[in-house]
Structure formats: structure tokens, C-alpha cells
Image 1 (cartoon, rainbow, N blue to C red):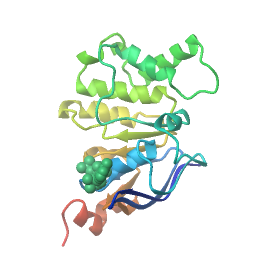
Image 2 (image 1 turned 135 degrees about the vertical axis):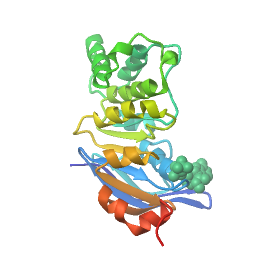
Image 3 (image 1 turned 60 degrees about the horizontal axis):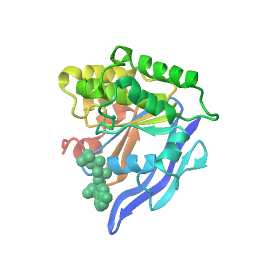
Length: 241
Ligand SMILES: Nc1ncnc2c1ncn2[C@@H]1O[C@H](COP(=O)(O)OP(=O)(O)OP(=O)(O)O)[C@@H](O)[C@H]1O
């Protein structure tokens, strides 16, 4: 089932045409990575999908609804949830308190009871195996642990599509395995779009890779096809010819 549909999406900042006729669909359970050289327009595209930026033409449908004019919060309420490159955790609060704040904002039809919130908080932490960190202040955590807490905040919001913005960015090598394991352990039916510079993570995780160059989709296919494509190698990896 199609969850997200981008149809000829464009973004212009004044004279700068940064996103060019981007079209693709993401279906239930799909694991897609968006890659591309610096300045290719990856962050702009994530911001457009999440609602931080409003595209200048084209359509964004989520579960069949045109969400193009909705705010970040309205999209998150519908299940379109993102994480950030830069930590947005509340410092001074514990892990559990941070997860609780996210649980209060989660997608729901009815007003949640205290029990509902408690259940969501504990499920969010146990899915990411961070229950042992519940009572630690987030400031005392390692970078990798903070990234897991951010992932658990996103899961606590009951996403029906998750946008991961460079989950491995800034994480020391010693902890990158932990982050990769967490990304790998995300529920298999949850569609995920990953923006990532770490090619080991991209190629070990993604089932589909969308290559952006100059704001447009250069190639869209499975990792084998992308790795073997001469155009991609030339533009993205600086190889070929
Ligand atoms: N608010 C803005 N105003 C004007 N130009 C912008 C704005 N945001 C991004 N751009 C331009 O859009 C282009 C794409 O930037 P973007 O950050 O989306 O690329 P990226 O692929 O995420 O790059 P990186 O890998 O370096 O993070 C760049 O040329 C950038 O300068």
C-alpha cells in the first residue's frame, strides 16, 4: 500500500531551483535511503516531506491525503514523523521524561489515559532496548545512546512513516554498530526513509536507494543497481570515465 507519494515536487528559493520535479512513492514496509553529493538537496527534500518547508509546486500525498499545506505537527499527528541530525532532546530531563513528552504528542483518536501513556513510554524504550537508561539524565548519555533515545521518541509517536535524518552523523565508530542495529531493528512493516552519508549503513540497510543530484532524482533502484550504475559512480562517488 502506498503511504507517501511525491508528484513533481519543486522547491525554489528565489532564483535558486533546489528541488526539481521529484516524484516517487514509498509503500508499507519499504526501506529507502536518499543519497547524493553535498548540496544535492537531501535536507531540503526531508524538510519538504516533514513540513518544515512548503514546496513551491507539485503534490505530497500521505495515505492519499494532500498534506502539502499542513504543518510539521499536523503531519506528525497523521503519522509522518521525523528525527533530526541535531539532538532535540530536553536536557535536564531523564530519558523516560523525554519519551513521556513525545508520548503525549503521539497520534491518537481519543484522549489517552495515564495507563495508555505509560504503556507507550515503556514500549518506546523497550523497542530500542534503552529501558536501563530510563532514569538517567540525557546530558549524561553518550552520543550513540542519545541517538537511540531520539529514535525511541519517534517510535513513541506511533509513526506510519519514519524519516531518519542522518542517524549516524557525529556518532563515534565505536557506537555506529549500536545505531545500525537499532535502525535494523525498526518494525519491519514501518516504511522508513533514511538520509545518510555513511555508505556502509546505507548499503547494509536499504532495500532501495534514491540518488539525488542537482535537486533531481538521478537514479532510483535497488542497492546493486545503484552501486553498478556508471552515472551514479561518476556523479556521486567521483569515479568512472
Ligand atoms: N533556505 C535556503 N535558501 C537558499 N538556498 C538554500 C536554502 N536551503 C538550502 N539551500 C540550497 O539548496 C541546495 C541544497 O541544499 P541541501 O542542504 O538540501 O543539500 P544536501 O544534499 O542536504 O547537502 P549536504 O549533504 O551538504 O547536507 C544548496 O545549494 C543550498 O545552498
